[in-house]
Image (cartoon, rainbow, N blue to C red):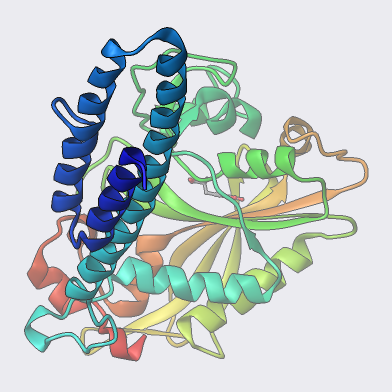
Length: 350
Ligand code: DAH
């Protein structure tokens, strides 16, 4: 066995016997580092003639790459072992039941959102989304509210200090209706989409918060009209409030993006401090809706001669408050544990 072969054999033996990364690192240093075995070997080259230098040099190179290969595969093996041990020691049994004292609750908005999604999906609606920071064009202009349109002032808009772009000045969207345009531009009709998301208006009292949530629905199909819109909303509200005989009133209204427009009221009475739907003579406004204005279809690149649009919009907190008797809108966003304890839902009954 030559000197080099001996050195290789002893290195291989030491590497093979290493059982942790720290030791292996130290070993690597003792072979390749300053004063290491390889450096010592290289020193011998000084005393040789050119021919011998070339021969020994290439032998050393071969030795180096052999040892490095062995080292690298050992590093890999030990790293894998360490990772395995780490994963085992950090194992968490996610199937364990929570301790009652640490059991969180489902926020009413999440609960109601899931209910709404279930019902709308059953009619074939699919989810569509848009950003919270929207441009003036999609939030207003494309929805038939050109500059200086009086309806713009009805939305107390938060403008954002960001450079304007093709979509106009930046603002926090005041409603989810811009998603209508985004959906039409992204997909060709027939279209049945809904969106749920946060919207923002500069307003704050017991029935208004600067941030709240809306649900938006849009159908763009051939041969659809107000009767389809009316059926869907009536069926939706009966299912949502779980009241078969819910009476409804479609009251003429105005929205710039729909023509004709309506607001839907549902009947109710208050008994023993509780609100009962489907009975009594009182009426409560619950949603806005209408036939999408041809100008809006045009902004969505939809041929208004061939397709009709149906749209509707709800306030999510309002739906939740009415169904689950939650009085003050502000509680939704105050992150008060007592509030979520009172109005939240346990995971079990979800
Ligand atoms: N975007 C309206 C609002 O925030 C709500 C609304 C009304 C949405 C009628 C619609 C609609 O899609 O058809 O007040």
